[in-house]
Length: 91
Image 1 (tube, rainbow, N blue to C red):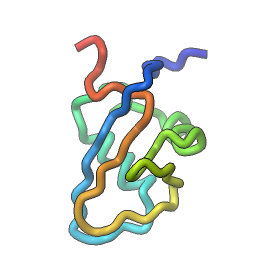
Image 2: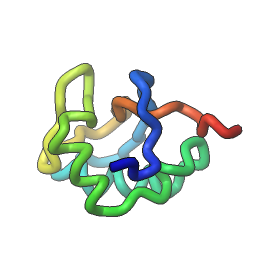
Image 3: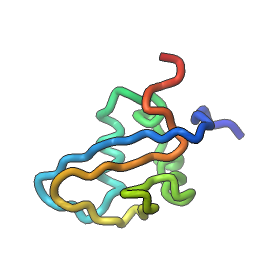
Image 4: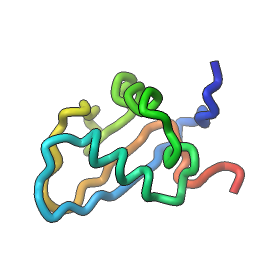
């Protein structure tokens, strides 16, 4: 089944800046993905597909797989979404 997601070994990187720590990565990351304009697919990803990224260990912080309940510390955090281009391939 092809859901429109690019099938590559590339990664999409997103830097999140927080003024206070947050208890869950899933809500913060989805909000930030919706704001970005670099990857159209990730900006419009369904909640079901988004949950699958965590299940398939495609969300990483410092090379380690993140779970939806992973906390985010105050400051800068670079999040990697494995298998997605930084920019849409059509651009």
